[in-house]
Amino acid sequence: MGMSVTISVASEGDAEQIFRLQYLCFQGEAALYGNYRIAPLVQSLDSLRAEVAADCVFVARLGEEVVGSVRGRVDADGTAAIGRLCVHPRLQGHGIGARLLNAAENALAGEHGATTFRLHTGHRSEGNLRLYRRVGYETVGTSEGDDGVPMIVLEKRVPAGSYAATA
Image (tube, rainbow, N blue to C red):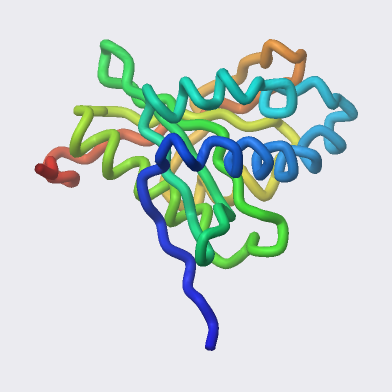
């Protein structure tokens, strides 16, 4: 009997699994750019724990194992920064990333008042760009990461009345 992947809000106890998963998942991105100092690979566990405590963080679980994660936060102007979307390599291509992104968008708009979603990915990250465009994100510019990697910035407006606040 197979198990299904569930999406839920991350708890403090998930931080170590998210930390290990993030390190595993972003190896491919680091190789793509020849840069193993990208932010997800040099983030400390304490910094990640602080994000889990303060931000909107979701995980995908297969049984007790965290197999995906995403996080976001809304700034004062209503823009939600979404980042560090990752899915275990053995489960990529099964819609888990889109489900995590959807969960984050619902919470950020419905519970935190986001009016725009913004994310970024490396300019060579074609799989990421395909996912983001497929779920409605459009390129709005470029930037350079703190690690020197050229980034594509994408945004998606929150349609009026599309996300209901939850109690």
